[in-house]
Image (cartoon, rainbow, N blue to C red; front, top):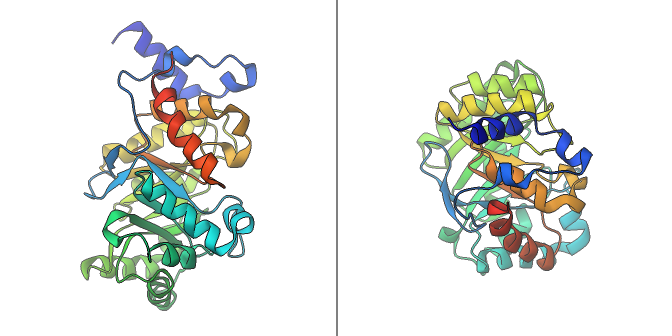
Amino acid sequence: MKRRDLVRLGALAAGTSFLDAGRFPHALFAAERRKAATDTVTLGRTGIAVSRLAQGTGTHGYNKSSDQIRGLGFRGLADLLEAGVDEGLAFWDLADGYGSHPHAKEALKSVRRERVVIMTKTRASTESEMRADLDRFRSEIGVDRIDIVLLHCMMEDDWPRRKAGAMAVLSEAKQKGIIRAHGVSCHTLGALKTAAATDWVEIDLARLNPAGAHMDADPAPVIPVLREMKSKGKGVIGMKLLGQGDLRARVDEALQYALAQDVLDCFTIGATSRAELRGLIQKIPVASVRA
């Protein structure tokens, strides 16, 4: 391995001081080939093909609302989802907790279902809760099948025990073709390690950025866990790339950091306007190779 590659790998693992010091080492994170937001990538061994950039709908999401919903309104978020597909994006990141299902349903009046992969998230724990959620979610989104369903915001190390009923229903739903894949989003390092060790997890939504902002832990202990996931064929989707907005003044560096990672298949960012969405699409190719 070349010395440059060794330095780069160390930087990828540590990664927390660059933004603080204001000296982001662009050359260490420059890819050999240009990457685009609209590149088609496959999530682990699931066979599910998505765009590199997913349209997030849950920035500061809580109580069935988010920055996207509060700022754009019902029709505005639907229009933004449509605009993303028109720009070549093919992945929507929804959640029951964000309240973004009806907005996706409205967008699907203009977007052909087969053009977009739909991911959503549930807080269900029991079998009955999960069955009810699957029925309600499909009605709210206006689809017969949801591509990806994640257990939302795992925090306990023993979440598989706590969520056994919901997991069983999602496994059954996959067999019946109601969903295509299942997995989790994690909000503690312990929960993330459990996800890596749990065969049931096919897709993980993981927090990663160069400042360690709003992450499960600093990047150094998180990246090896994500690498373990990748080695087992799990799909890994990055989130909180901009640190829940903390890094919006350092978008280029945050994007370049994410694009250089070998542990992320793709990532989700919640734009709040067409201009911001278009800006992200334009910045990603530049950030991927900037030296």
